[in-house]
Length: 335
Ligand SMILES: NC(=O)c1ccc[n+]([C@@H]2O[C@H](COP(=O)([O-])OP(=O)(O)OC[C@H]3O[C@@H](n4cnc5c(N)ncnc54)[C@H](O)[C@@H]3O)[C@@H](O)[C@H]2O)c1
Image: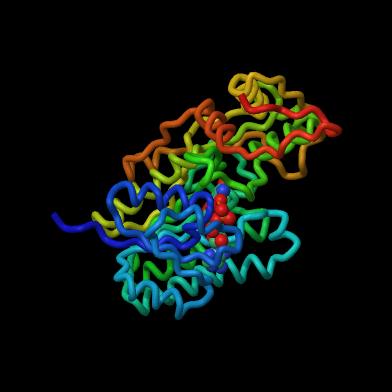
């Protein structure tokens, strides 16, 4: 039997990258991580995983790592991911995300590496008209973050047409949860961390919008356990190793949960009351965004396995709440 190829994981010290590195190692594969540690944490990486501490913008460093470790494919997670930050500093986002992708592709060409899994996002769809979003639906991003991801997808597609590049761009929906405390997300701004912050500060969870056209009036989103997301990357690696591919794939569960359903799951898992307050919706927030997952099931034979309870329980087990203060607001104890 031939040994599985070595994969370079950019952003492998991050939240999703860290989970994916662990999954790749568990199947006996050799992995190299390239990360500038701008938001990543070196201690997310198991002992023995080589870490190249460099930016993907440093084409020579990337090409050197690809050659030195005889890499056969790349998973490209490394990026900034804050929509508000991208609005405040669009140039930073285009430079890092589009510039990072072109730098990586240049290095891959130089080193003769022809397989790529790219981290894209549901943000490329902007404000979808239908609740269930298909890969063939119009991609009309509403932030520099979403735009720069879409442009990167296009660059990859065109390089794939012109040169020997086999690729899969994965559009993730809302990644949540954690496999271990060490791999938990510290930089997220989605609903789950907002709930934890409200817990920690002893204030109600702010729910933006209670009058949407959804069963209970609150927004519905497709949350996906980060462990399932990591498994999708392993399936993508296997697919690229089987033969050429060029596809954009949604990665979600295909099932949406409303904010109130998420709060009910938190109530059930923590055994605590979860007070909330409904305020006006945020401008541009769609009522429902759920991934159509037919294409990824067909292309990769992958589908998500973990349900909302597992997502909430794993996020709760991994969260690091600050200690209660005697003079501060009532504090939620973990049970
Ligand atoms: N978390 C989500 O819900 C979500 C949803 C859709 C898409 N994504 C995409 O998934 C990828 C990973 O996100 P995450 O949630 O793990 O974020 P993260 O911030 O935890 O991980 C990003 C990693 O990339 C590294 N990095 C950033 N810029 C770099 C650069 N120029 N050179 C080298 N390393 C760099 C960081 O240090 C970090 O380790 C990103 O591309 C993000 O846009 C995430």
